[in-house]
Image 1 (tube, one colour):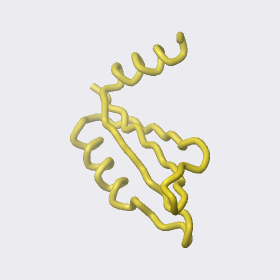
Image 2: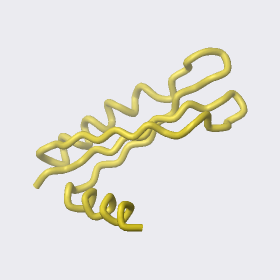
Image 3: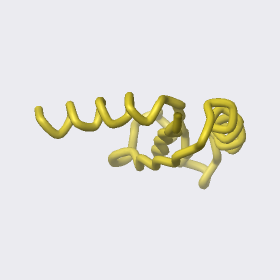
Length: 78
């Protein structure tokens, strides 16, 4: 069974206000263990200070590929 790592990155102002829409990235892995490993490695880089007023924050979630397909299909049909 394949697993998907869904990652979201957003730039925040010094006041905690999001600047623009998040960037979503998706990677496919052959197992949940590998997916979780990459998730932890990805999240160690955040929050990242871009400059004195801006910070990049991130969220990540591992899910089965069938669950990912179900969620994305629901988003398209709505």
